[in-house]
Image (cartoon, rainbow, N blue to C red; front, side, top):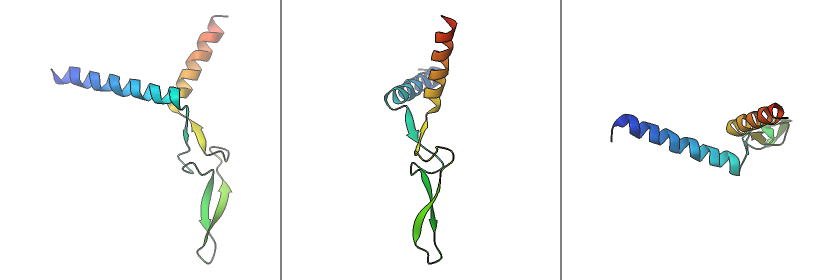
Length: 83
């Protein structure tokens, strides 16, 4: 099998796996707060305490995946175009 066909097959498998992940679990952990919803800071004694709420995920700890966002945009465009 030529290397080009192997690379294409690998990319197709990777794309379908990511599409399945986006369909099964459309929300992933926030990359900034790592799914906590807030930052971890320390006080003057070095003890960990809760910090400010994460602005990126609005303190939910979850963000929509890129693939799911693209699917939502395409579905909205199709729905609006066929009305």
